[in-house]
Image (cartoon, rainbow, N blue to C red; front, top):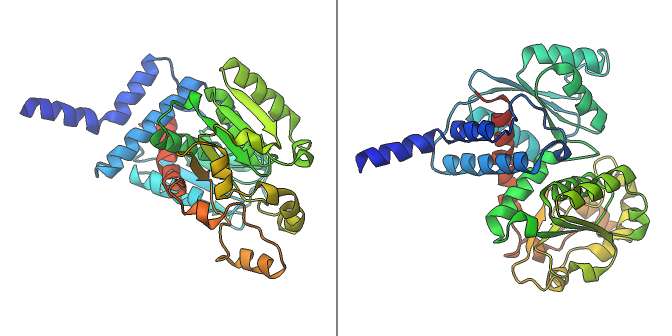
Length: 357
């Protein structure tokens, strides 16, 4: 019995390495790669990252930490501020033994006194991996092109792949169905990066995804994203739909929320609220799914009450910017804080898989 226990402990302690070996044998090559968008990854590779994230989370909960990133240096470049993304990368890297350097828009010459190409080449000499969170997808693509080290997309205006990885992990934890049987409905601004990111993730994994918003905004969607995700979904047995009909809530396993105005779009809030108020997630929204176990996810931060400075200011002007009611946000259906925690575990999986020992 002691020998069996010792064997099990050895396996458990070395799970990241074992999973990596299995991935190599299965032809899943992630080490040394960038993580820029989910469309770059196969369903099997995404599945591997989700499995690795779950194993790393279990080890963390059991108090078992490793240092597979010992001796590694990671740069975090943030042109957009963040709570979850920054903390997730910093804590995940530190727990695995890496050293982190944080660079914001005010502490870097990138793109100002130094070209993006030159900055990328310099950073690639110092760091083993680079995370970028900002606006233009081309910036993270160019960092990957010129740095010579793995680059991870922490968010751009076009995509948010690390968030989708955490979302998928959370759904696996709370939904009894396999991912390719799950229906996700996104009520809100169908042109934003979270909707596009979900379209890509759902298409890759053969899921049913419904982008639900005003027709006026649907007409403004990036047609390249629409066409590529529709084609990818067909290839993988999934379904992507764009609608403004509440009837399409029926059968949803997940309702996904996001704010109605992204960073830098605050001036457009009154117009957005006018368009999107019919798509606010309420308990009636959940009831319309006819699924008593429907989940509510949100990438956060969320306007679900009037306890933030911004929500109070707009309320004083007669504008309700809440994309979800407090009743839904705090209900048994909501798994938003499990989802937020999973940012760290899934991001850790990306770093371990791409630059780990």
